[in-house]
Length: 601
Image 1 (tube, rainbow, N blue to C red):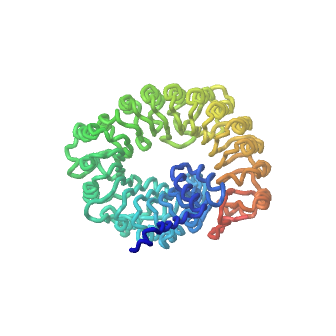
Image 2: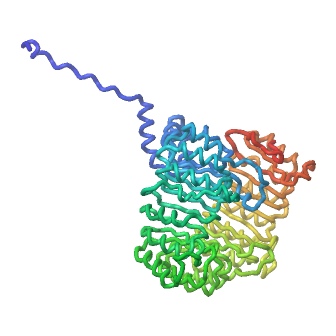
Image 3: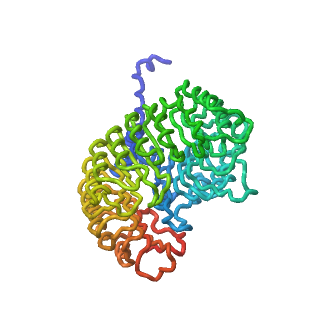
């Protein structure tokens, strides 16, 4: 190199190109939005501008489609290309009460299975399906198409599939961590077509963390089940069906030292060799082992329990946070000694067989209780009265951290409901089901208006309400005036006139789901909600006084709503009265797979 070269100034470095401002903003937004978990907050952020919309789309990993008819899988895939966890809901809740005719066809999973098969969701890790018809073909297609990232499948209140579909999932989804089949109708009517789906899991260690099949009506191979549990070292949740005996349950528990949630199945002796000579002390030893590990915090099952073996679970009572006796008709004498040890209980499901005495014992002991369901042993209007206002008042005064309750009874008083509102002010869900129709306060003879009025007045965090008993328009005036956080309202056999519905639709500005059956509400009440229907997820009205003309008027004024008229009584097809109105928002417009008894306006 020459001297002249040494005297030359060093060459200036070329400045590094900066990314476009839009890209910088998108990167910053995506980083920030990753810390935003609330779906409502994310939706609000996506509406700010196009760049925020892009960033929110790119970072959303959990997607909920709470009405299967609201958006197609193709639209969801375009909007959220990186979705990992998808929740889908199908039929409206009133379908659980046989109010939706068979063959409605608005909750089929097939389009979503086809979308997965076409790689529309390449990052998918979990599917949660509720009240959806899932066929074996859907599960076969799904199991062969799911990406390697897929881990969890939850089926709740679904139908349409059999053991063959479960076998396909078990055999092909090798990285499966969760397979929960809860309260589903599984079509295994043909004995020759039944498949041993538990044996379909591949040999060798599994990644299973949760396995639940308490609703499966057929027996499974216990040898295959025990082998599967033994080679699943990460298993923490296990729910078995009623064909698993106490002796078999004891053997399964020996393989699951990390168990946190146990569904016991029948909780009775069987005919197998593992049940011969099995006594209460041996079962108590199995639960005592779980208690020493301090891991078991949730118990359910007990579908055909033998009372003399119930004391065996006492060893884990102090650690329990969840107890589900909703299939177990325990008496007060059986229930009180056990619940008296459950000081950490937060969630309790019981039948009304525990009577008021059982609820009073719960109130004395379970000071941390947040969720209480009291379900009917006999769900008929003329059934024996087992729980009353005495039990509800005790719960209100003793369990002041209560957040949610579902309480079935034959009669109630305003005073008891007012006690709930005064003591449980953080209540978010209040569902009182007085099974006798139009029942007033059985002490004073007055309507239940003041009780429900106190609930909405004193419980400002209330988001879900189910009413029952004799209610006049005044009760709905209270609801419209005070229930400003209410999002879900269920009404049955209540109200005097359209004024009740007007109070709801004009006062409850956050209302998203409104379910009404057998109420004297007609076109005037319906039309009073025109300003709010676009903000709602759906409206269901059955057995009311609606007419075809009134529903047509709604469809004409609000063309972006889907207005379905469902006729569950074909013999009344020519009348102007509307049997069922199901109205909902949909980005796709009216569906095409409508059966003959459904008319879309």
